[in-house]
Image (cartoon, rainbow, N blue to C red):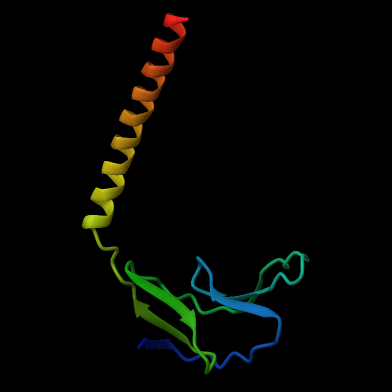
Length: 107
């Protein structure tokens, strides 16, 4: 699914989240559990990976840095239907407001 970028061999500890930070290094942070807040991130290994746009970088099960191509968001019917719903909703609200104003004038 993904391709290896660099062999690191990082040994994982339970209760920590491992990720590739902005600088391209392997970092870990304590995971939040049961209402307790997580910890501050710590650098585990300095790798200096230069990230390319359109790829997701992660630490695989062997402790190596890998990357996978990101799926592009689909544009289509969903985007258009949301826009139509918003316009229709505004028109309905305007009609309801006009009816309420008309009823108040009659009284």
